[in-house]
Image (tube, rainbow, N blue to C red; front, side):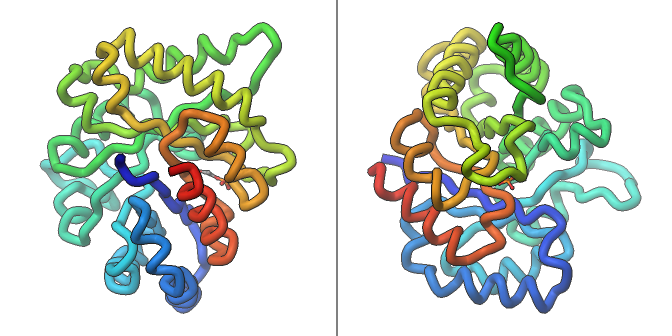
Length: 254
Ligand code: PEP
């Protein structure tokens, strides 16, 4: 059975190289635990080289975004050749915080294609802004999923991972998070959409991760009672003790 997937999205934290070093040191104390997972750390880009060095025994590197182009001259863009040379293996693409800054699903698709061509696994983020009792968020999710994968055929779709992150939950604490039963329902819905797009066998090969207020308090139930293959973790990934506990929760399911 494939290892559970755990992705740490550090966002724009910690605030200095010295703190990043300390965080990596804290995480490295649990290297034996993390080897049982498919663990990816997505630090701010200036810390990638440090993370490559300090986490080489227990994690692989991820980036939080990437350029939508592989050729050409683009100020400030992280092109796949640079990312690959640093050892990046996975790219978070279409995070809601990037979409809130104007990133469109068309740009997400371009980035997904660039990543796939470069041999970087795209972790495609989708999520609704809010939920309502009429279930309109399902229509929104369907559209966002379809438009973020537009033009991808079944063969290439096998290379992606989906992160379902309800936007209204991100950054909250476990007590305000999505209840496991609602997550289970949403994961089934997403699997059905993927199956409609690519067929059942491809849909089953695409891991769906969950992200949004995953903390030690809710990680166990979210993993046990749903159909996810792992987590994308924001704020709790900055605390080695919390992150360790989340990793343990992922492993109790198998
Ligand atoms: C995220 O923004 O990807 C995320 C999962 O954040 P948090 O865990 O802080 O809710």
